Length: 288
Length: 139
Image (cartoon, rainbow over all chains, first blue to last red):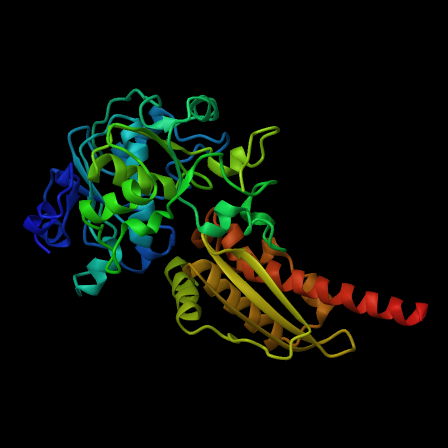
């Protein structure tokens, strides 16, 4: 796939995606840092794109104590260690259809690091094309990264925001599996680890499992295909103020990326408290 | 083993999982984990009637740590011919240590998915035996 083919998919912001071919041509570009972020944390050690650095959503991006993301000081330190400066273009890729790659990208955006892209197709496409993989961990010189300001207001939703959204009947997308959405999965015996006391979904939320946005080869569907799903089926409209959620906000960051960058919705927030917060909250309304 | 070798050990079990498959005549079938988070397994257990394990197997899918560690603990339980109580007494911390803290990091839940599900299967099996015995006494 070429950059032209990404352009032909009709996205609002085609520049948010790069092809595997583009990445292969920029492996040694000092203005670009390639970041692998996976669910399967050993994949990077087993083999990764040459010169890619690893960012682990648990150990690098989460606050170790409080349920929150890292603070600006730690983000600046992490960027410095990975050889990323505020001007560096960061290209994310990972396993599971770039699920965790978009999550890391979303966290970068909280800190105003906006020069970010996703490698369309992710790790699975890179591997399928037989491209070079290495176990060698690059050692970039530390970069200068001033402590940024974190702005949670634009792309992150908290429980109070969701409650307000409910009152105003704003559109919401629950991107979990149908079993989680209906509450059936939580009530299957032996699945307490889903992490919530109650099953179901936030009233009025449409159910669009996150992975419907990608094709079998791991690349994103075209804008027309995505519109059929999110507008035709889920009823979203251009200009909508949308909140997406899942279990802990990781899968919904993928949908946030799709709605925001690929379909051009300007007001999309990811509710990272998601079902593990809502489904445990006293008197939070639930629909099944 | 150094870190690289410990990772290779997990990867080898991930690619060539031991004792994987459905046990048709299992006394207990126990699911565990989450298909959307790290991995999920189903453990099949058949007791020998004397506190031992006649057969044990598993199916599942997930990441390298959860699947590799499940295969490793299966091999250990069956290879060392552990009985039910010995298996229940396996220590999670010790198991994670044996896999390598530097490899597992914060993914201890993934690493212990197989072991915890085996223990759940054993407890379910023991409860069912207890109930059966109770039924017989009552009858």
